[in-house]
Length: 145
Image (tube, rainbow, N blue to C red):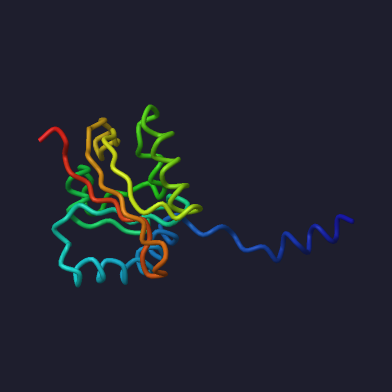
């Protein structure tokens, strides 16, 4: 029995470092960034999610609005950026979009910025999951401005 485990352990490859995973995600999302720029909305603060709430892409304007430097890592789950008191509503709406085809939602919510502070934003959310090249599109604006 131990021999079998030794064979299996020997065939396992070591986990890939996080920076390699980020590079792969960056290459995967390069097409999405081009889509943002070609659509003429690169000046808009837009976050694209998949059906599970994972961030697929964000525009440079979204990074600036959220106080993230271009090279600063961004947690891949959108929900990890949402304040606890706003989380249920956001998760419910994303789930309704993913599973029931809900088309849109509007939120006023707190998001954690790149400097670790909570800030109020207004969000207009559109479901574009029916197009395989798109996802859930969130337009952010600063509600404190």
